[in-house]
Image (cartoon, rainbow, N blue to C red; front, side):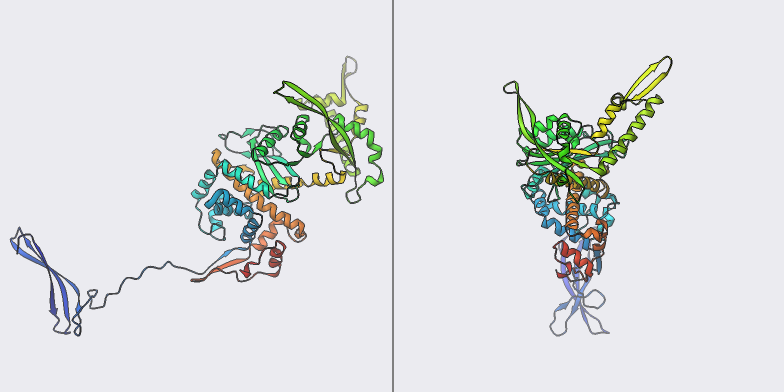
Length: 537
């Protein structure tokens, strides 16, 4: 044996009691310190008496078993499925899924999952999403951690959003009007660039963001939004909208807007770009008052009254004094453009307008009498009252009766201005359809958890608003079908979604997920949406 060498041999030993021969792995090496050979043995098996082969054992005279691969445990489970199934199928039908996949790729399922959660859980915050996804089937079909949902908002880019707007606009009906309106959303963050202090209906002492939204008047679906500083008034946003639509290669625009967006500059801009529009216009404007006085008798003729609404309406073709500043020529173009003025009157509205005006005049009179002046009311004080102070009679507040009479003369009247020829009835129908905008804003604030912005970075803000916007498209799609199929006679929107949310999907080991049963009324809802019953899948 060479010093330091190791020799391996197999040693056989027979057990005298059992008669079984065992094989051992024997290793020998030279121990330099003790100057002698040392050996170790390890049992490796028993010898088969017939074949002479070594059969491996576990050391306890039992045949060793090969290790089997560990299979993941698969238990029976059931999750809520019916409502998310409806929303996902609706997203496919409207082209929403296809456009998201084209713009956002593998982020699509996460976007849809969070958007569906916002729709179905209007009272919950995003912090509850982890709990919800454990009990519901959703497009991502796998857990989305809080960190992943936060990262998602930051990964959504402006280029992707713009591309999505462009694709969605092409799916709208080509000749429909687009309703345009705005709302203010409050924010707790002080670090966002476009958040400014202002006033909203809730009188929040918080900074705010101005959110503009565009809906299809016939399709009932939103396809564009823009966020602006909360300090920018509505009337100044129209120019920015037109610039955005041009940048998105969206032409043949037809806009319907309320009178908050009216200004001569805005109408000039719409006419200058040859865009069709329908906009509310104040009765105090000279163009409207002149035409009202000239056509008031005609307006009140019985044939101009709509029996269903009780609204009198007539259309007057008139001229608009168009102005365009031409910087390249350093002059101002002035010319007359043909427009159509739609004039309306309603008896119920007249009574309400008179009541509101009298109440307003009473408040102004009391403020003047008690010297509790408000700077914001200074113009109305001067318009409706004359205030004199004399040594004998002291302070006297006298109403301007003629001015008040003229103001009441126009109570109950309103007007719309358009560049496209149509009847007064058609114009009123289009204008009233923009009520879906107001409902849309309500859905953003209340149902989609958008009344407060709880983000602290611009990227997260952009991403969160976009995902809420996707949820709004889904809500608008459900709302549109419910109106057309008269489902609101049986359900509210929340009741319909809750009823479908009772449909469950069951999973068993080794089998594909299945929906066991759908009740008759639930099947009827799917039929109304022209969506395949999930039991049939």
